[in-house]
Image (cartoon, rainbow, N blue to C red; front, top):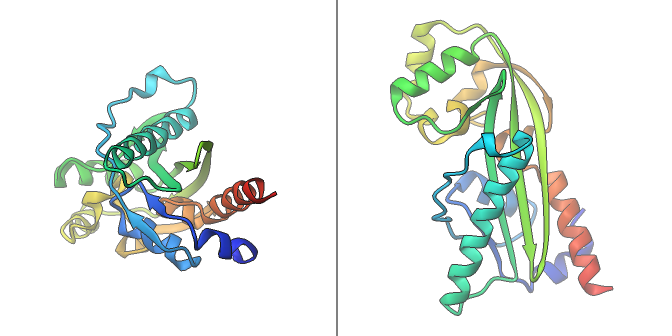
Length: 207
């Protein structure tokens, strides 16, 4: 989708407001050269303050982008495009972010075992003064896991830096029976919607 505007995007300084090498790899895989600039936004928003969980993850992503944008401008190192994302796992109205400990990872995975949960990824793209926001969802169906299997997975350390305590692209993929929706949303960056947004924003700038 981006090939027809790649000559324009190649001239832009694109920053990913994230520390996630997975998100960086996803963006690079579509041909974009991006710089990682992890946001230091405290992520202290309360989901109860928002009408929907979609709006909560979008606002978290927005605050990441705004923090990075302001910091880079103060350093006289402004970016042309800043991409921010926030991924959360939800089950029965409860949100699961990154586990705080191995025990927390075990507890989260135990709750997800044998059930369907939903992954939400909110994305914000700031292109100069224009900002676009969206949220994508995907359903994940876990197999029935024994405590032994869960602890063995936790011992790999993979769950500790991932929303919901698992990574679909890694060992965690063996826990999943099937998915409904965009695989890349579960990884943390929905590529189709992101590419669609970048295409439209670039076209608006060049027309």
